[in-house]
Image 1 (cartoon, rainbow, N blue to C red):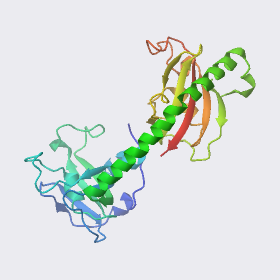
Image 2: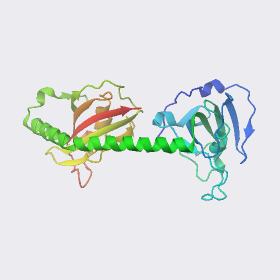
Image 3: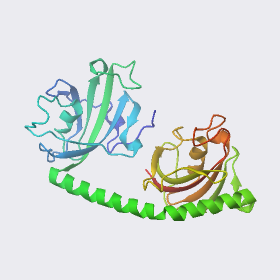
Image 4: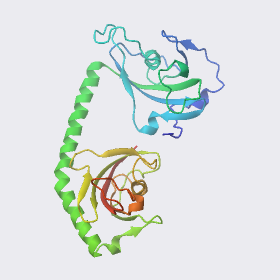
Length: 297
C-alpha cells in the first residue's frame, strides 16, 4: 500500500544538498548522519524507539508515522547465547550510534536483500530514513510493557461488559429499520449508504490514509449477527479509505470523529455484493452495523 509522505522531526528534504560525510557500518552498509545532538547513546540491552520511512530518492513507499505506530527494537547484548553468530541489521547498527533526536539515512542496496520489498523491484537503492525518539533500559521497558498489558486487559473487560447492551441496541435498531420507525432519523449519501449518527464525536475527524480503531457489531437485515468486536473486547484497526474494508465502511467511518457512534445501513453494492461472504453473509445482502470510532492516528 502506497502511503503519503510524512514529516520527520527534521524533514528529509532539508537534507538534500547538504554535504555530509558518509560512514560505513561494521557490516559494510553506507549511511549518513543528518543530526547529531551529542546525547547519550543506547547501551547493549536497551530498547530504542524510532520513526522511519523507506523511500526511493524523494518518493516515500512506507512511513511508520502514517501507520500510526512507533517501531522499536532491542540493542543486542554483547553476549547473547540465544542468538549465537547473529548478524545485526544495518538499521540496528546505525541506531546503535544515535542519541535521542538524532537522525540518519541508511543506504541499502536492493540486490543484496534476500527479497526485494514491494515498490522497489526496479530500484538499486532503498533509502531508509530514521530518527531515534527515545531510549529505555530493559528494566523500564518490561515495567512499561506490564503496565500497558494491565491497561489493555482492563479496557478489554470494560468492552466485554458492554456486549449485552450493544446487542440490545442493535436488535432495537433492526426492528425500527424494518418497521419504518427509524426512517425520519436516517440520512442517505449519494452512493446509497444510509446512516444515523447516534453520538457526535468530539475528537479528530477520520480522514483517508489515517489509521482508525473501530468497535462494531454487524447483523443482516433480519437481525442475525455475523461479526462483532464487542464480544472479543478488541477494536479493529485499519487505514481508512484504502480499500482494506468494504466501501460502506470506508465511507461511513469517514463521517465520524473520535468518540462518534453511528448506525450504518449498507446496501449490497457497498458491502459484499453479489458474491456475499459465505457462509455468514449471503449474496446481495444489506448489512446493518453499529460502529464506534475509538481512535484516529
